[in-house]
Length: 458
Ligand code: BES
Ligand code: ZN
Image (cartoon, rainbow, N blue to C red):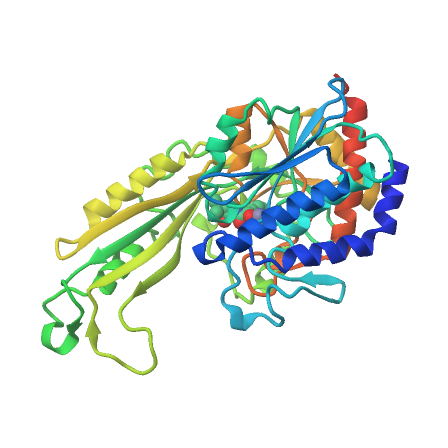
């Protein structure tokens, strides 16, 4: 392990330069226009793994973007770690708000700016470079490694479950490790113990069969934007409680005892609000911000359209209005069941003046990870060795659907060992990843593999 750590230190600048190469590939999975770039990123990852000295790395075709699978099996006596990550990224829009182009990485004040620098190319790359550090120094890798790096995480991972089902044997492991989450705060290392799930739908209301002159028809023909806005406004009550019947059924909201523990975490509400320039929070029934953003369900409109959006004024009564709506879910809530409840609500609340189109786009299950699993302590100890601080355990509000899939399909527990920060602006303009955290992540992973393997030999 010592020589692997030394190799990582000595080659840090090379690692950063390589990461910059990967960041230059605009692997935007949601937009079909970028499919060749997404493939190029997958090929790049395979080539990098082979250069690092891994025994096997391949590009696996799916019905969508390819999956990178790699493995380095040392011995059946050793435990096997399955690393998951994603090489695809979110679209960079709104592009005008970037201070430097999203696919031309630059370092400013020790931070590497580019789309995907944190989510998740920079974080998955820490695993590739940890592996390289072992393999290139002739140090025997302390455990077996398998890697599953997909290209559709940011667009719903629709081809991932079929791939896992078709490759159960190949993916068998003792634990899964993912670096695709955030630390509690700057300088506060943490391990994520739960993630919210997701249900994502699109609704469209059609009123008249064409756009109309609002002077000729307005007042008698209902405007679909008005109707949609009225519906959306009814989805929350005055206390910001979601009104869809049955929405909270079965949801495991935090118990009083859990809340007592949760409130001990050093969450800074003032700093949180200040970081986004908002005067006050609006949470469900006034619960704490930390609880609301990590352990409580939500319903949010992510996009809305209809009518005239250009410069100046146009007196139109539009034919169509639509919205994208997503819900973050907590354990006990099932994505498909929630979508059914929301569909029923729209069907019964849509006025007779409108025709409704309701589509289920994608979903993912929420998870709580087992904090008593053997790999957890190894992860916590590795983090403490690198940072000098004991990591905190906290839930996060984002979603990584594969964590539940690993448990359900492979019986695997996951360790969520992330090095992002909420201020890294993932999915936003000016996404960044601190090079200090890139370095910290590599050091932690090298130590984690060693600690976990030495304590868990078969
Ligand atoms: N890395 C994020 C998930 C994340 C973000 C976890 C912040 C914890 C804190 C991941 O790439 C992501 O954005 N996932 C999507 C999943 C969705 C498309 C099902 C998300 O959370 O919106
Ligand atoms: Zn991610």
